Amino acid sequence: MSSTAVTGTAAVPEQVSAAPDPATDVPDGVTTAPEQVSAVPDRSTLRLALVVGGLVLAVLLGFGLGRLNGGGPSAAVGTDSALTGHSHAPGTGAHEHGADQAAAAQAGGLSVSSAGYTLTPVAAAFTADRPGELRFQVRDAQRRPVTRFAIVHDKPMHLIVVRRDLTGYQHLHPTMAADGTWSVPLTLPQAGVWRAYADFTALADDGRQTAVTLGVDLTAPGGYQPRPLPAPASSATVDGFTVSYQGTPQAGVTVPLTFRVDSAGGRPALERYLGAYGHLVALREGDLGYLHVHPEPQPVDGAVTFWVTAPDPGRYRLYLDFQVAGVVRTAEFTVTVA
Image (cartoon, rainbow, N blue to C red; front, side):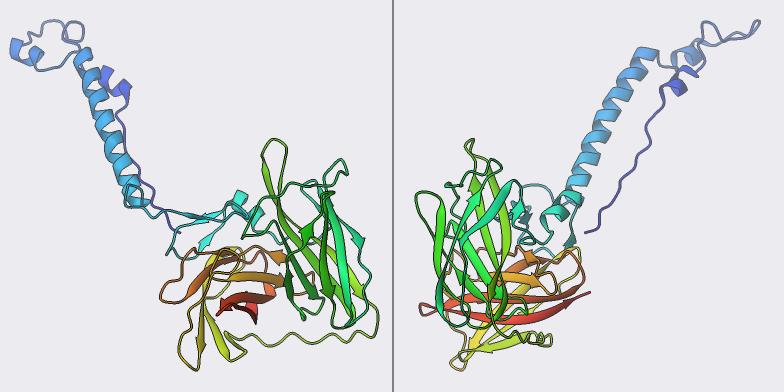
């Protein structure tokens, strides 16, 4: 986003005092005509003129800057995300993050502890391709189980599970017992090391909300043969639906990605899923850093826009959950960020 600097030149008070004083600065022997003396304003008049002129200049500059920066009643209203509090004006283009916003754009889920909260598995033993159960607690800095969570995207807890090669993506919603223990049925279909992300917003006793994503590894013993990441593509097919997107993610810049869903019968009607017309997760290849992605509240011409901030160059895997006729499906994409 470009900005325009406006500069002005203000009158210097010392310049006013440089005007000749008819009572003291007239050389001896020189007679000054009365008209000439009265033509020089006194100091109080000059000060008043400067004050009035300064006020007018300030008003004009303020109005001009407001117009340049898009202020005023006609400015677009930002759309807030409950995950990070970061807002984007609908329809705006790519923009760089400032220092405070860049911190919020960093990948999460890289450790079991962050922001004073710790993810503690209670039961996490799995056999490949057999039903199991994941049980865990979120504990605060005093090691106490956290039991108060905000509802974000219709749920107090979002659990994302994926294998280390970014296959086998699952989006689950555990339930919490009174003691703060979360549980969810979980099947790891193939052997290997898996990553589980707990995405939640904790509520402190004083009402403060803290959005956190914590990550932990899960293991299904057996022979692990990682699959290569598919080549980048802007479209994918799932269950007869063709999902495509427009936009180019950039490192350190927030850009819109617009997704469309089509089928042989035309463009299906997207339904709300988790409080929005789609849910997008982005994971970074290598360390599996988890990115928050911000959706626009309403589709435009059947397309849903998400705001993506990739903190670093590299390859990322995108997972778009969308719902049509009561069924949730997931389209997957590989993107390269320069």
